Image (tube, rainbow, N blue to C red; front, side, top):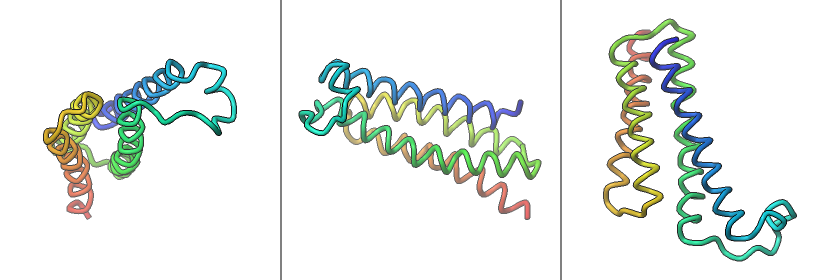
Length: 131
């Protein structure tokens, strides 16, 4: 398996951890019965859970872009130092982004966001420059 596909699999696992953490907080805040119901009249999420909800949406957006460029590169047979490094940067930046986002540390989070975006763009660049 290529480094790019491995980092994609790791990123999916990270996304699952983020979703489960958010769901766990929801269950601890509202109870299993309320979370399993219609969830129409739940109280507002706690501050940490709100962060994790935003983190989930942010990871979803970025994972779609990253996953697509990795799969296109794989289908096109493009795998080199640039794409492997880009995929690794994406994954490790997203791990750091998740930790920083959940902790609520200001000003650092965008650095990790843009590092992850750089990883995605570097793979896209490798694909487009190979045309």
